[in-house]
Image 1 (cartoon, rainbow, N blue to C red):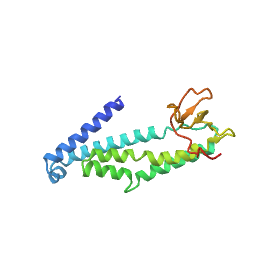
Image 2 (cartoon, rainbow, N blue to C red; image 1 turned 30 degrees about the vertical axis):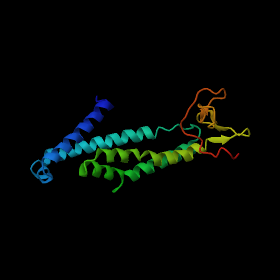
Image 3 (cartoon, rainbow, N blue to C red; image 1 turned 135 degrees about the horizontal axis):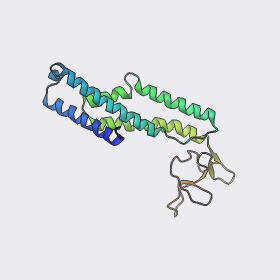
Image 4 (cartoon, one colour; image 1 turned 30 degrees about the horizontal axis):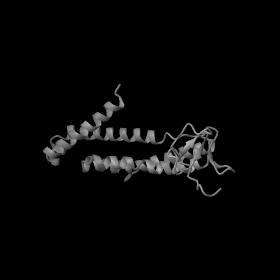
Length: 184
């Protein structure tokens, strides 16, 4: 069984082989005389590209949720699925990274495209997250998913700007509350 590290190494090696072939052999020859091996290599590069994309999305969508919020969890799953479906449509992200890797031989552009997959997912999650943040009468914000309070950025307290337990321990810097701190 191939590990993720081995799979990533193979993806980059396949891409480098494709790049080397394209630099040394005219494209017309690759697509005619060497068509079978060239098309196999292109398929292997795309298989690696899609694998890496799926791995990234899997990590990106590992958002904390509140088990009792069935409707919210279903809404979040539906929104994330819609984003994924849009990325697979003609002209979508998958077509764009195919063009970056196969047509332009640009791994940096591919990685930039992959990095852009997080922002729309985070925007959807932030709407879900706000449902679980509540401003208390004291002015503090409580998150029922993390079961922690938001300690706003405070001058002189370098550890501030995070979620904390009531005894100021258990810091968690993920997902600020997305609520205005100056209004109740």
